[in-house]
Length: 212
Image (cartoon, rainbow, N blue to C red; front, side, top):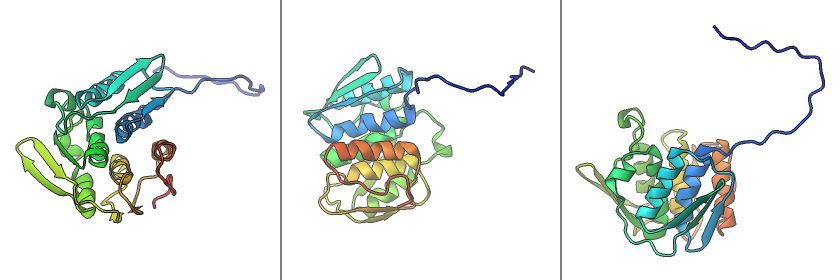
């Protein structure tokens, strides 16, 4: 078996460049659809999941560019509320467009998100949270239809500490008048990254990184 042998006792000095986080980049790409203004995200990893997430954003009308670790997204016009099945089915991160498009368009039709075995990571927590906000959900075969036209700011209690469900609710309520409180929220660093982006876009988010 290979092993590392580390001999210490010497002062350490120098700098390293920290690579960007996929788990932060994917929800931030989705959140960029909440505004018609241009959004720039820096230090984004150049990986297949990021490229697929950008393709999903393009499929609903956004303009996306990737250049040396920077993603630029401009979603002036969202042309449809239904994602292309062949794209969304590739990536679990497609689930994040639920919250983004509900926040922007108040409705969405999308296939079951791909990437993982769905039975191992169901999206019931997401759907339950949207229903707590007043959304109406229906299923047609592999399609999920969500009507958020009657959603209102409210208190949402998640069924578990789900990172993507927390992010989805944050996006869905960012454009709703009034204050929403999310309880049993996930507290990972990428939740704070999402909060920073939403605050930069004009929302007022506090408590990111805690469970409320």
